[in-house]
Length: 276
Image (cartoon, rainbow, N blue to C red; front, side, top):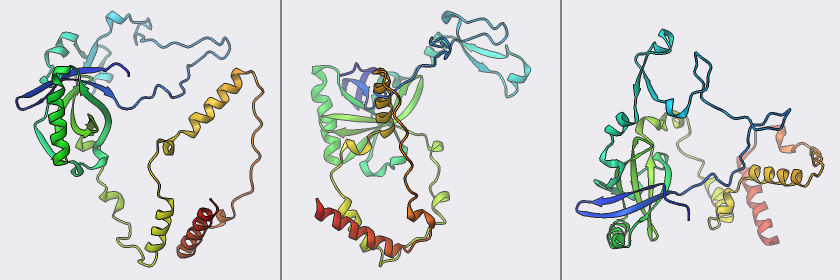
């Protein structure tokens, strides 16, 4: 299990327990590339450079700067207010180390579009297991999620806590001004579908329904890249490009009879199911 990247306390009124949090997702398995000098094969490194002198800046000389006005970039390179680490630490909030649940909402009331990134939250000390379990099970029984705030990367984020199995999933939330209203995109769509078509689509849905599996979201590009890398490691010649197939007859026109298309889809699915 990867090391937690945050540790603190989960608090509900007078009930407090130490907890640890780890990201629920990871990009570590993704194929990553380094930028190389094609002529030498050496890696290309990046560094901060002074925009006036052109000289590299040492780590200890780097600082946070805030532009003093809208036209600071035009007025001069040195028109910034510099903030030190002490300045940034002085504005630290209680939410840096404490997840204080101040309200609860029905689990289904939070629209999915507001959910940003999931994290696993678990007890960080055997003494706190009981308090953690009580908070978790009470939320699960009432089918609610807890709403709180947490500082992540010097930025206070709204979060929700969702009971999941023996643990809790903490979701960071997008801010309201980050979510675009759906009405402006969906207002021109027909409100009701042809009732004669719905049963046909329902047949398709039933035939295509199965239990969820993580295999449904595999990355074909990632798999292809890994295959290419493996072939190159073995010093094999690049595979020949696959011959282009014949154009799909259905590409001739975008205008189709939806009833006929659905009937053909249902028939094809039934035939496929019998052949299995």
